[in-house]
Image 1 (cartoon, rainbow, N blue to C red):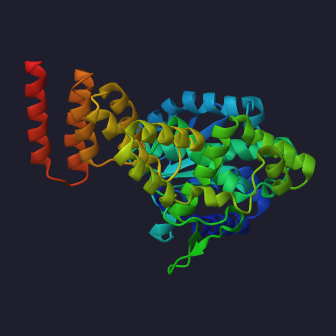
Image 2 (spheres, rainbow, N blue to C red):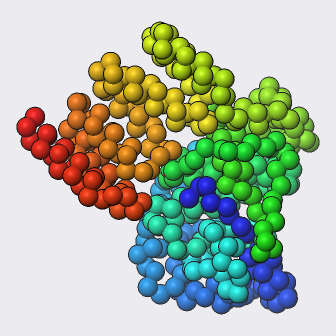
Image 3 (tube, rainbow, N blue to C red):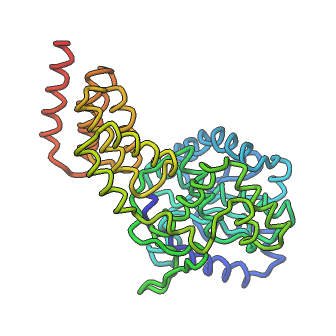
Length: 385
């Protein structure tokens, strides 16, 4: 989900064209009608400070989104602390529908927040968990822009990588999605949208992940207040780069290099594990403590430590660190491995992971029979024990 490219410019231009042609005064007083026609929605529900527009038959989806609001609201209050009274002034409308009318399907990867007309569009053709993440992501854009505006800072004075990184981090913390490693790292301030053969433009999946990593590292090194502090300091300094350097002591021109896979460090750990496991464990834990949760080597180091603990029969520690890799891997083998480890310390969890391995095999079109056989073997072992 997070690896997908989100192409939004085509739909943005389409919406702008329709609304501008209709006339600003007409739009201002008839936004709901015009956009409901455009997105082909025929139902609406008042959700407090916003309305959601949807298609008849999608009531269950709307209910699921409504159920996410307590978590989203709690996160918003902790990060931005915007009152619903103030947020209601935006007159936000959310449209839940299929792909956009008269646009290329690749424009319709997920969703968008269009500030000019205070609207969010969500493509409903996602799994429930993906839709929850998408909903909170677009809401985060809305919240962050409103916070920036409340300080009388131009939203464009805050770089795009911050806007996107904040939205990614906001969503990932309450409705996490599986992520992959960054294959190509670029300077954050030089990231540009790419043009496809179809004519649409957007950031790549690598770009979005790097933006997430960049924000998460700042939060890890400071705390969640670093997000709003950056906006406040930008207003004070009248320049984001100066504000960033002052608050973080990082060089924005080289900050991206932190997210390149450190192959030398990996080789160093591998060599050390051959001669001194205790020292290798110590050094890997120190490195991970320094880097936080999101960095390219995290998955590999979790596996190294987890397998080391299994060999030393430290099963509780092994399970704890191997579970972190559920963030990065979602094929059935990881659930199988977790089940094999958990059987030593938590039988219920072992059975749950074995069942999840079968479900994952079905989702990923693997050999389901092999994982069903594994589940049967685990059930037999659990009965014996």
